[in-house]
Length: 420
Ligand code: NIG
Ligand code: FE
Image (tube, rainbow, N blue to C red; front, side, top):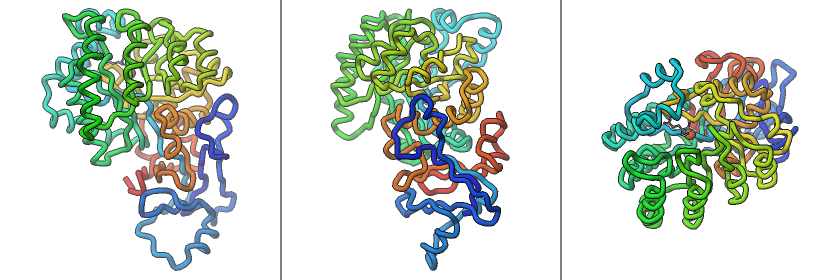
C-alpha cells in the first residue's frame, strides 16, 4: 500500500513490445501524497488486484491480510527477468581476466585451452551438491538485485553425464523455489578437448539428446530450451541447425548464441527456424535484422560481455527501429561475472543508447517473451505471478540511475507473494 508509482509495463496485455512501444511503459502514478496504490496478492502467489489505496480499502474492507508492505513513497516494477545466464560452474577465471586486460582475446584464451575448457574441467570434477551450493548462492544474489525469473544453461559438462548433472542441479533450485527458472540444455557450448566439432555434433545427436529425452519423458528432468554456441571455430551454422532441429523434435524451444564474434548467419538461421530467442548479435548483419523482425525471434542483448571483452556494440537502435523485440540478459558466467540486472540495464543505456524505459521493457516483458513465459511473467497484471521489486525512490528510474550498489534503492523483492 501507499505506492507512488506502479510500473505495470504493458498497457493492453501485450506479450512483447517492439519499436516505439518499448518506450511506452504504462505507469499508474499517485499525485496525492496521502493516497497511493496497492497490490493485492492471492494465496497462490498471483496478483489478485491493483488499484488505489482508497478503492482497495473499500473493496477489501474487513479482510485480514497475512502480510503487508508499507510502500509509502516507493515505486514498484515487475520482477526483473534475466534472459541469459550460465550459473552452474566451479572454479573461477580471475587469472584470465588479467590475461584479457593484458590484451588476449576471448578466442585466444579459449583456443589455448582456457575459457570454457577451464570451467569444464572444474565443473566435471565438482560434486552435484557442491554445484548446487554454488548455484544457490548465486541465484540468491540475483534475487537481491531484483531478478525473479532467470534462464539457466548447462554447457560446462560437454558429456552426457556432466550435462545431466548440471541440469539436475538447475532443476533442484527450481524445485526449492529460490527463483523462477527457465532451463536450457547447452551441450553444444564448446568442442571438448581432443574432439572435433563433427564428433561432438554426432555425440549430441546420437547420445546426449536421446538420453536427455529419456530423462524428460520419464519425468526425471524438466528442460525448456536448447542452445548452441554458433561461432567461427566452435559450431558452424549447418551444425547448429542440425542440433537445434533435433531439439525442436523433442519439444524444446530454440534459444541460442549467435553472431557474437563474427557474422555466422545466426540471426538468419534462427529466424528461419522460428527461434524463440537468439543471444549476443554484436555482429548481426542488416539482413539478419530484417529476418528477425519478421520472425519475431527475441534478440537477447548482453551488455556485460561486450563491455568486458571490449566488443563492438550490437546495433540495438537499428534492431528496435526495425521492430525486432529486444531483451536483456546478464550472461552471468566465469567470463562476465555480473549477477545484477540493474547494472546490465545501466550498461545498455550508456553503451548501447537504450532509454531507461526500453531497458525496463527489455528486462521484463520482452525477456519473459524470450523464454516463452510472458503469459505469466514480465508485467504487473491481474492473474500474473506476483513477482515485483519495490524501489525506495520517488521514480523507478533510480534503479538504473544509481548503479553498482542496490542496497538502498531496492526496498524489497517479492517472489510469488513471498517477501525477500
Ligand atoms: O555467452 N559465448 C559463449 N558462452 C558464454 C561464455 C561462456 C564462458 O566463457 O564460460 C557467453 O558469453
Ligand atoms: Fe552465454
